[in-house]
View 1 (cartoon, rainbow, N blue to C red):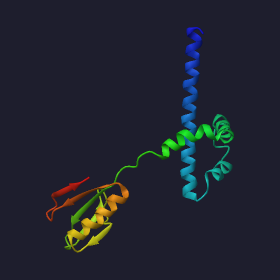
View 2 (cartoon, rainbow, N blue to C red; view 1 turned 60 degrees about the vertical axis):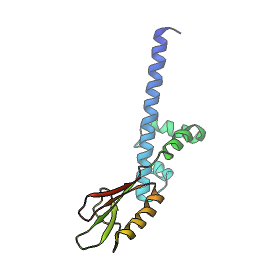
View 3 (cartoon, rainbow, N blue to C red; view 1 turned 30 degrees about the vertical axis):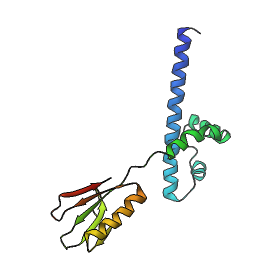
View 4 (spheres, rainbow, N blue to C red; view 1 turned 120 degrees about the vertical axis):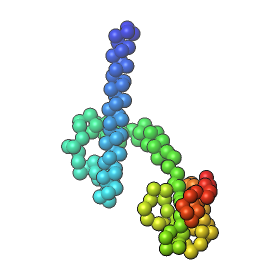
Amino acid sequence: MTKEEAKKAKAEAKAKKKEEKLAAKQAKIAAKEAKKKGKTASAVETDKPAAQPAKVQAQANESKAKPAETAGPAVAEQKAKPASKNYHIVHRQDGKWQVKFAKGEKAIKLFDTQEEAIAYAKKLAANQNGSITIHKKDGSIRKQRY
């Protein structure tokens, strides 16, 4: 194989990889739209076949014929580690303690004592693989648990 042929093959492989990424991205967008509308992904493909370029449609048809090849990347995306959630225990002006997300405006739940709020936040953090930040009455951080 000459250098020119090698360059051409490399460029073709790169272009194919780029097209595959685009097709995967479009499939992901279609799945999100389907989820919003309450349809399955296959229903979306039948609703909007003309919206996709011919190459993408051909790749979609190939993926239906060869499910083993496309299962690898999809499984890898699903196993991606979700971002851990950070819960804050903060004192409110009305005298109650609230548990809320780190950047959240609303309280998840209100408690009369800080101890009750800490116990609840521990359960949430354990279930969601999250962390806890406990604040003092003045708002400064008392303790962070990871």
